Length: 138
Image (cartoon, rainbow, N blue to C red):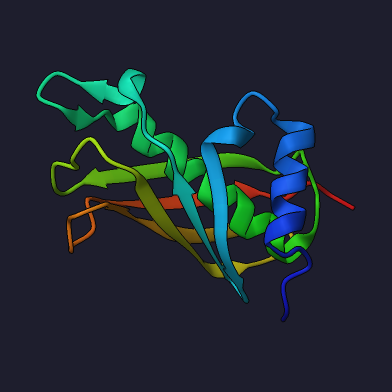
C-alpha cells in the first residue's frame, strides 16, 4: 500500500485545516505506513529546568500520527484520536524535536501505531507514544 499524500500535500492540508498549528510542524519524510515530522520548540514550550514540556511532546506525537494516518487514507480532516499513551523516557533539551510515526495496523475504521520522539543532541528517543485513530466512514 502506497501513501496517498506526500510531504507537500500533508503540509498544505495542515495549513488549510489547522493554520494555528501548521507553522510549528514540518513533514521531513513520507514512506508507506511512516511519516517523519520536525517541530520547532520555543520559550513557551519549556518548563522549569529548561526541558520541553510533556504537553508539547504530546502535541508532536499526536500531530505526527495524524499525518501518518492521513498519508495513507487521504485528506480526511475528521480522523480523530481515540487513544494515546505516552512514556517520557529522557529529559529533552531546549531544542527542536523530531518524531517518527509508524502505523502498525491500518484498518477500515482504526489506525493503530506508535511514535518515537527525539531531541536534537540526544541520541536515544526521549519519548514513545502509542496511538489509535478513528477513521471516518466514507
